[in-house]
Length: 250
Ligand SMILES: Nc1ncnc2c1ncn2[C@@H]1O[C@H](COP(=O)(O)OP(=O)(O)OP(=O)(O)O)[C@@H](O)[C@H]1O
Image 1 (tube, rainbow, N blue to C red):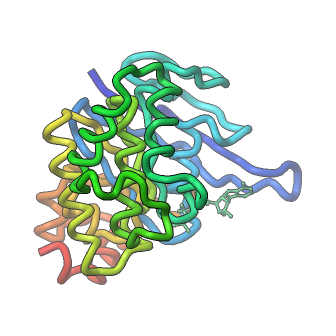
Image 2 (cartoon, rainbow, N blue to C red; image 1 turned 30 degrees about the vertical axis):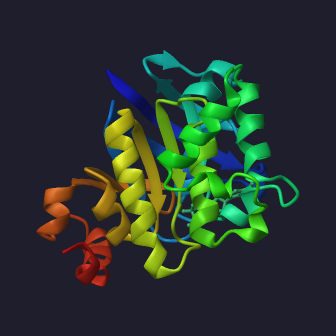
């Protein structure tokens, strides 16, 4: 069964002459436990696809199935238990006046978990942070540590699917690989399914088995990681992306 299936998704903003068709006829499916990448230049519609899945865009058409179930207009609590999102900027996504403990307690309580203390300790350990980080505020953490906390928060409800929106692009290059490796290990350990957005083919080449290339709101090509490594693309735009990230994906 596909964890996520998108059929002929269209998303637009505005009306009449102001209408912007941000996503056009997008279809893809992600089998359970796989990692799927969406790449393309800024404004190509990648984040809008993720936001449509999470119910954050008002006007869309098409089919979105999560674990075999069609999604309607509203997302319920079960959806947010199963599908969690990690954003680009961990500083903006963590409340500055909440400690790590409060952030994780809130996420666990929201989904009705008991034994909060031991779960927090486990979550911190799973993202490579010791118990010493538990009572720190975001400003007392490095960018990489903050993103680890954001990942721990996303893992708190024991989701099946993570939607990752440029999860490393706000981080120093030296820390990016650490976070990508952490995400790779977590996917294997927890049998998670990922949909990951990035403008960087090197990053998706590292993380994803299958990649869709977006341009002007459309998927222009889908290719497997083997083709990416052999720099085999049909579409000129994909070839251009491959050429420009040649060094990082080999
Ligand atoms: N809330 C919104 N209202 C109006 N237009 C929007 C809104 N969100 C996105 N858009 C437009 O939709 C298009 C796609 O944007 P989107 O953020 O999905 O691109 P992206 O590929 O993720 O780019 P980036 O990598 O810069 O985030 C752009 O033209 C953008 O201006």
